Length: 185
Image (cartoon, rainbow, N blue to C red; front, side):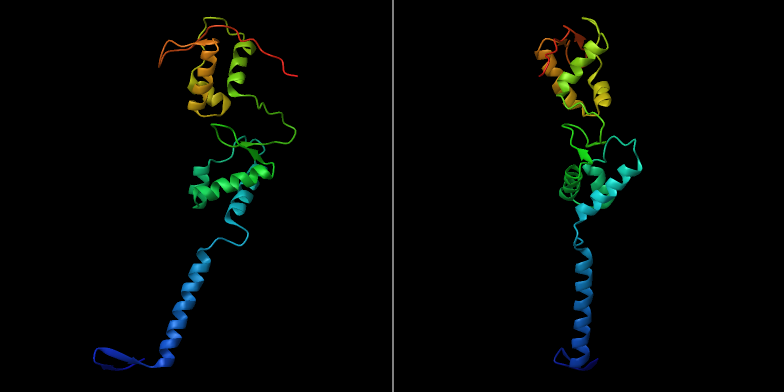
């Protein structure tokens, strides 16, 4: 390929050189194309994988978190969130404020009331008496499938409404009053 060196420059056989450049350019183009998203959209492919997992497991109640999708599929947060939104559009899942995405099972009733109302129902449903200890934020977070800070906000609302009493941080909350449930029409 190299004919002779002259003043520090090499004289190249032009046919071999051009052929080599074309091969390098072709290899780079193949590499660039293979790194691009598929024509259908990576987020849609991820949504299809998650949908298949939900379909194969009827007991599934929650979807993987965005962080799990990012790790498992090696994608950005934006792509993971678009996949979750695609599942919502398809009626497979719905977002839970402060929690993970919930699987929607057709025909299954879902309580969509605010969390503070659902927590207040514990007092009446389980016949918790005034002065009795109330479950911790951690226990309620597990029970309702939401984050502990979300439960804490709901408990703060119940304290402000006079339903619960708190003795301070790290102390057990107690029931101050039985909530009055308003009927909705």
